[in-house]
Length: 196
Length: 418
Image (cartoon, rainbow over all chains, first blue to last red; front, top):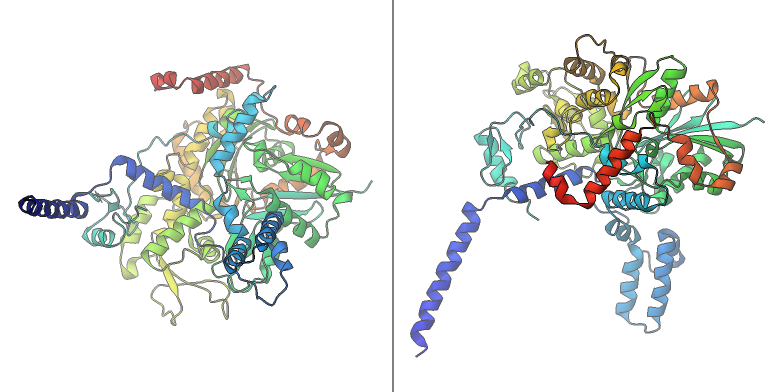
């Protein structure tokens, strides 16, 4: 009794699956929102100091070397962690020891990761100024008020691949290109592939 | 009492620091550097000279978007620097530049560090632009100044009248040397060779090769030409830090001897162009020239001609060849024809100009330093009112800001306005 419906179900899923994949490959476009997100992510990238990880983050100190070097390296934050590590030692398992070392080795990484964004700093500080009893009006929102206004000229358009003036834009992601050659470069390398 | 005066122009990329009787300041990188090949030490400030292989340096910088955010790092760098320059804080006073006195945005704890940690006797603070404006007024006798400061993390334009800042006229563009270097890195990494880790090398490449085009469209045409007709393309042979320590500029047709190299064409002028047209890379702000005009128009009408007649350009990112000429040209095209527009050509080195101004001021006038005693009595409360001098008591401004506060609270009104 179950036999016939089962067959039909399997064929239906196959059909559905294939159409989904073809949708993904061919017709998907980025909507305005996604494009905007992409742009802001790129702009944030421009303010980054480093595009790679801290080369000293994963240094594992020589086992024979005395351990006090660790504390000096990371400053006060790692001292705290070192204390925690000692507590761990009460139950000395191999796993616990490893975890402790990993924690100690990456203070800079943690600092970077949990750092507040600059705008968060500004917003927080302007709130403090707002709420202070005798706020100097000149300091209220000064950072945002000083931002230069948008240009009166329309933005110019440049090819994302070669940097020269461009007349066309990609139908899927909106990036600009100047000719067939640059379009192919774009399709092969960057189109839709920045969606992290 | 014979006191030494230290002048510290605390730039995000280079600090300009020195004693007031020196001929010129020392440029010291304001960062801590970690190198891949040297795992046992980090290079703080001036120690970066000892770092021989400048491949994939990792920078830790105390300053973000023009403001000191990471005070621990900053203090560490200052300590090394003062040691290196033989500064004895307990018998000195310090002139210090801080963006907070142009655009007050973040807490400033430098006072505490200077007085409590280092033990300076007196502290004077101003923004770099203020120093430039004061120098122009007191020494060159120009009462109206429009200062363009294009630094590492941002570009600001500010108009000063009689040494007072017109606060409404401050324009901030979020493009500076860092953004330009990063953008150039992006472009080269995508088009030619992955250099996304080589901040140091690409920054030098930018300094050596980039220029501001006087006529962008013309340059664009030029760069589309091929082979011998093209006068823009240049090859940049990267240093290997064994035999060569600096990149070499070559003609693209010359042989490269198998050294890694990149060819810059359109990037040479498109990079600095971002300062004049941030919209080229989707930043929704106007360029430097428009910001100057905007800034001047925020001042009273009678002042505008004299502001336009004294535009001073400082900061590391204005060192691109052609920057001043282009600014002059664009500003002229946007202001009324009867104004006599003059972008000052008296600035010898835009990077150190603010420092030099500070030096002249220390020699010529009594700056309103805060004394240790005052600091002990009143603490932080007095410093802001002392150093942040803005024009117009501006009841009007006060009202508008209050109005804006209210608007923020009720966003509905805001939408109606739009």
